[in-house]
Length: 161
Image (cartoon, rainbow, N blue to C red):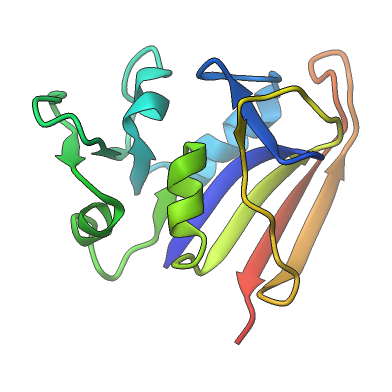
């Protein structure tokens, strides 16, 4: 199954200057739990925003830079080759950035969205989630607290049959 996982603001903002717009420790834990042991597909800029590769995951990096390499990671020139590099009978996660989300939303089977209840100025946005294509199957509201500056909701969407 192809799963897109993203934290998305009310106005679909994802990030600015290759960085996140918020810090939600519980969402990081959820991301780790969901993606650990799986292949994660991302664009090069998303990969470069990490201090180091994320443990216990196989990184598949999409880039047009022909000389880009990173030890222990799979580097491919496009989304089609990224998906082909993943095991066929296992879930794979697409983790960004904005351009990769746009290219993959028509291929995905599921969206795991953390909806951050705030709007932000951004330079990267998530594509619109079309309710005629995507059915919201679960959601769980998380109130802001001393470690989370914004309310947020975990949402799972599945592609309508």
